Length: 485
Image 1 (tube, helix red, strand yellow):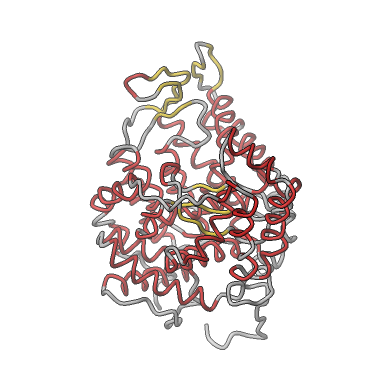
Image 2 (cartoon, rainbow, N blue to C red):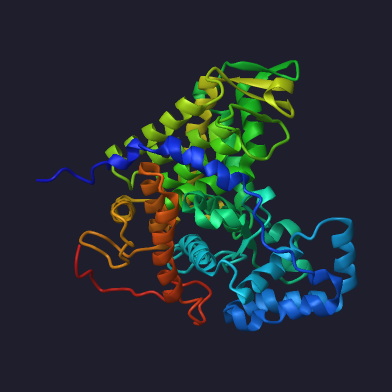
């Protein structure tokens, strides 16, 4: 009898990760940008860019995006223009750009590929098939629109609830933005998972607050943290108390990370590391600003490694090999291995600590947080947990590895399920691409081949194919019994 489950692939050796990290810097530092149009010089200019949205975007986006946008600029143009002049053109330019870039065919293949990844990610958490045993989401169910711009800001999204736009403007979907250079590097698309995670978090009222309360409670009472003290701004206090406060402050970003890992598997951890390390000039920071909403870099990768190690739907040997690999990246690139520090300053040489956490104690917290967020029962999800809705499993790993094999053999990955495989989703193509690029950092060819396959999935996508469901699997097939195992 064969051994239960699947065996680890050689891809967890990450043979070319150093080269990938080095090459990613040019994509991350690129100042290449899309052209800034003069939408806001007149009402007519704005509307001439908005109205084509009725023809360019699927009908499901009309009522929640195009019509409110049209009415906003028709009725309140002077107010919006004044706000832009005094503050920023975000999110107004983000919104209009998504229509204009489609009209011009700007980076069309990458846009379509990026878009179908966004749709797949949202479907994995919010559509009726994913929520079969759980209540439907309270808010946004339409996936964000893809946009290429603002390289100086890095990948970002302005979530609907952040601006209150669903109430003030009636716009009930978001836009995810990446610098144009990243359109040519699919290894960085793992950041998409994180950015979409913000919108997914807000789809269920109270979810983020409940996650924060649950994590706070688990850290506060963790036996392995009891009896330890730290200095916070010169005052002694229990380590568990300060750590719980810190994670509560980071929760918005951490939940987004967890959602990305559950959807893309270990590949998301590779993508996070391959983005953060070149961004930090070749290091994973073990220190961070006390007022920064993102966790300390190294803790983010530790959290991914700990979460992957706890995913029981993935064979133990596979998940352990990937977790070991991610911890190996941390060991090689971490700036310090004795403590984690929060404080104030522009760089490490001019940094003023407010609190220093012992290294091993904070390592324990990432294990607690990973388990709590992925597998903790949530009242907002009717006593279900996040990994119950969507998680990486053996069948996902099998498909991702096969796709990586195809890409390294310079073949466009087949979208037909092979023996032992389930249906192929965009997440599999992104994960397989990241595996392949970490094995051999042929970024251009692998991205081109993966984009070809993703574009075909875009063409088959129900929303972008002109059908009415709000997510591509709102219509799905229930079989009496499977024909094949």
